[in-house]
Every structure is written in structure tokens, then in C-alpha cells.
Length: 234
Image 1 (tube, rainbow, N blue to C red):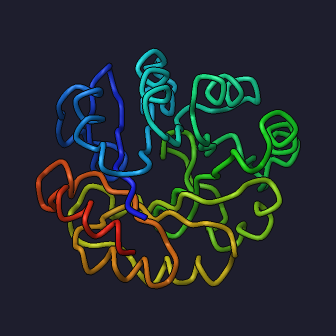
Image 2 (image 1 turned 45 degrees about the horizontal axis):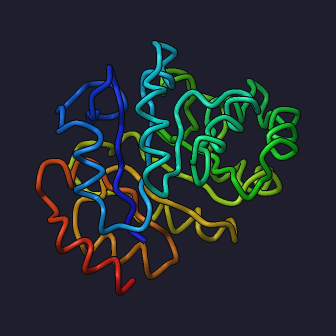
């Protein structure tokens, strides 16, 4: 499945390079939602909330009410997860809160499961230089995504795995990394970061991995019409 992304910062749709530098601003959120109407699911990330610099809550809620949306960014409590599900989110994406300095934050994950159910939880594994990063991609943990997959499986229905080193660079993604992740879990995996060609999307589909697309769509490198057609066949 191909999943277009709407990343929000300061009320606008943006794309970042490597989780830091703002590379572009796109059309307003609802206009982008209209452009993505041919896709069965979208991904909405509140970057301000992820960075602890405010939020775009009203826009997030509006998008969640209008589309089948997986929503993330600043989801740190069961109450926030429940509020997003009640607002219409199909699933919520949890990143930083899933971890402590020592590893997996089991008490928080158990509370999320009890509140919204693991079927509504996607856990984000953002990787930079081989290690999971948290707190808006600014702090590295001592463990890799591969090392924590099995520990996280009981608390979610899928993983969003982002190669931050490749994100926004339009230079291709790390297919070997996604193959290793695929071998490590039976849960759904969505790949993000650097996906630039139809061939990469096809390669991911062949190993049973979804593709979340950002920069390649917003720059026109990949055509929405072509992607929608491809999405019907993978």
C-alpha cells in the first residue's frame, strides 16, 4: 500500500530533510487531502507536537475526521491517543513515549493497549546512523530498531520505520534495512525515508512492506496518478 504523508508545522504542510531542515511548504492541508483522495489511507504527523513546540491539533482533528488517517506527533499519553481515535483517527502513531533510556517503556505501552487497544497503535522506529532516535529525532538511544522489534510486538499492530538519514534527500531508501526489519516481525511494516522511485515501492511491496511517501510526491518526482494506479495493483 502507498500512503501519502501530510506533515504539519506552523499550520502548514511541510517537508523536512533528515528530520531537521524545512525543505518546502506545500498547499494548505485540506487541499492536499483532496489531492490524495484516490488513496485509501493517509498519514498525518504533527511535527510541532513531536518537537514539543506547540501543536496543530485543530488541523489534525479536521483531517482525521475527513479521511482514513494514521496520526502521530506528540502522542505521549493514553489520553491523547484516545482523543485522536475519538476524533476519527484510524490509528495513532507513538514514537518517543514508547521508549525510556533503558529500552521499551512497557508501563506506557500497557496503558495505551488498555485505553485504545493495540490494534489502534502503530509504533514509530525512527533510525539515524543505525540507532533509534527520539524527542523529535534529536536524541539517540543505544539500541537499533532490529533489537527492539520483538519486545514491541505485543503492544501494537504495526511499525512505521523511518530512515532519517535518507529522509527528504530524494536519493533512494535502504531496502536492505527494510528486508531485515521484515524478517524480524510478522506485524505490518510501513517504510519511510528516501523512497524515490516506483521500483523501490515495488521492491517494498514484494517483501510485504507499505510505502509512506513525502518528498517524492511534493516535488513531483512521482506522479500521484501513477502512484494511485500502482496502488491498485500491489
